[in-house]
Length: 86
Image (cartoon, rainbow, N blue to C red; front, side):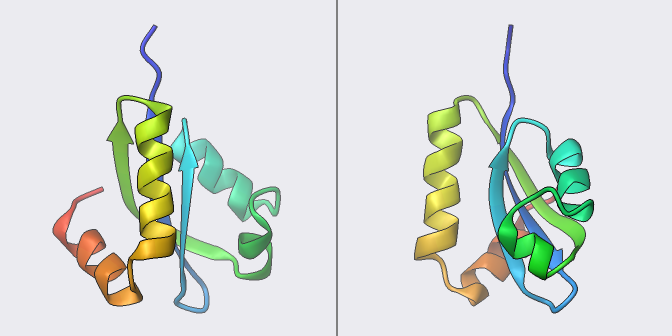
């Protein structure tokens, strides 16, 4: 069985960006909307999915999530979003 591993970025109601990992982007987005997602998205409601990318392994996806969250500036995150289609 082939598993899916995704890194996604959400835009929130205050214009900030939230990055996360999941195996099902749409389901995870609904969790964020319902208040069952991350603490950050309970405080700042997500508006839309602005980026998602699929990886072959969970390890690859988690490494990329870390890179996006901790290594990229907001400007670089916006460039990533603009240069890649959902």
